Image (cartoon, rainbow, N blue to C red; front, side):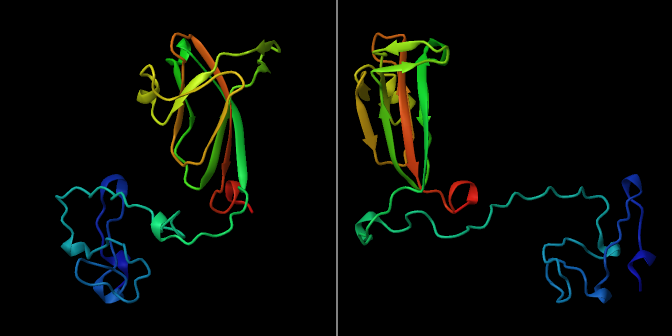
Length: 199
């Protein structure tokens, strides 16, 4: 029997008909019919449809895992190999002050990162074209709370530099007693498939 011969009109004139068992094109809780190309289809015979029940909400499903996980082997079980240079890098600068609460994130957590180098130059040219000599540095740490406590974190003054081999986030904050701070950074990383999926 054609599907359209057995139907009911729902809200906005929608056809509530579904394929019948004879068509082998529907699924219910117990049976998956072999000819059904859509195994997640919730269709059921119209005579079994509960008209008083609201339509169930769509379920949120996680994406299937793709490819190998980063660092799926524990460090203690890993075999040392020769390491190539990083595939890509990103550079920038961070300014902290009262306008952003005295803290700013330098880099967030990033899988596949090789290194982060942070330094305070002895001078730099700001956005207005003015040369700033001996800028006030920053204090860096893994969490915002860590650098908000005086005496915590790593202090970087003009001319100082540090390279950290980590995938963890890094925050920059004000040096104790200062109202502004400045640093530059360079991130070396190896994204899956290359930058923006390229090679």
